Length: 272
Ligand code: SF4
Image (cartoon, helix red, strand yellow):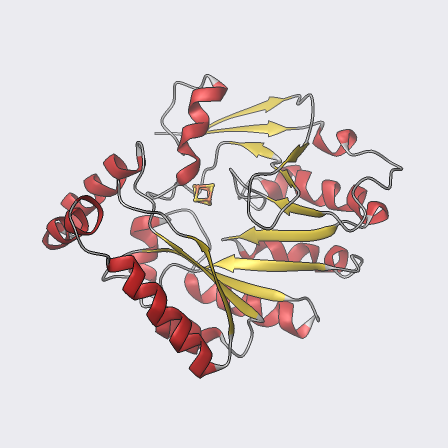
């Protein structure tokens, strides 16, 4: 199915955030063509009125840069994060450059900038990141296996290109990090991800797989189709007794300590 792209005009663009580390979020697009099977943002459909499946529509907020105030001290040293329910570096960002124009407008306001993406297109904006006194750019890495990446995040940059991009951010002096999430039980080798990237990542954040709401249907269908042998194990982790994630998270903390890398469990999703 084709992706339906629509240009829309937003009424506001800087929104108060519920995320742990961000005061505000900016989402330059509605919807996300990266189409991750575990996407938590699919709940957005409830608010947008879209009838297409999640991943099959994107609204481009063409006036978003104009909604950033020219002069205000309101956001100085407040954290602004791009993006919480889309990816600010979707393939169509090459054409529209909405994120780039937003960043240009944010520079005079000097917020603490946070950007997290699955696309190496982010490198295009290194010149702008350098103009923020405080900021960091992160890559989500769920697996080092690019075949698995194609199954779960079909339209994102390859794993290899994300790691190369991290290296380039490091060389450019940008504080960068790896967000290992969602951790997919028995598939995400988070230790290997750390060992492969610790030369170019300033710290790590972790999130276990969230299967709440309609996410479980999407994950379950993918497991049935591609990893049927794991379905029962996933059901046990989320719907039966035991505390799989507690053990994993303890192991993560211990491993990061041994490797001398900064780490934080960003989200912990409990049983359903
Ligand atoms: S990149 Fe993020 S917002 Fe986009 S589909 Fe994947 S998880 Fe959802």
